[in-house]
Length: 137
Ligand SMILES: O=c1ccn([C@H]2C[C@H](O)[C@@H](CO)O2)c(=O)[nH]1
Image (cartoon, rainbow, N blue to C red):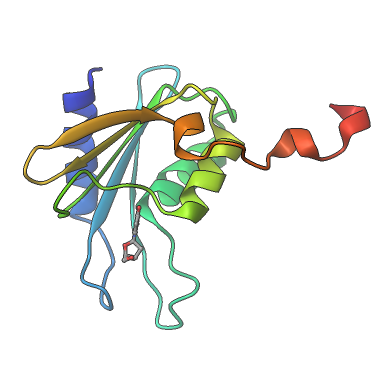
């Protein structure tokens, strides 16, 4: 599946965003190793802090459905932003945890701007699983 098609899936996912507070909808589409797409949207909360971003919704759904960390091919992210929508710091950390460093991250907006990057480019020098339990690594 190419970047444009995965972005279309992210646009679909965005329509399901639960955004009573920010009114800012974000969609994500995660492509697994078998070519299946896992959709995510942001889900907000009256206490604000428990809000889950679209990217993490898609990643956590896929993990909960039995897909292995590091097995994903790409993720597309979209919002109604001026330029391509860039993942927040928390989502970057979760991407580092659950995706390969060279996994493709496709950022877009509703105007059709698209920019491609990778997990490691989004969070260089990250703290990751490799920093823990050194003797077990
Ligand atoms: O990459 C991002 C950035 C923000 N949000 C959500 C969190 C919140 O619901 C709203 C405004 O920050 O957008 C995402 O889902 N993904």
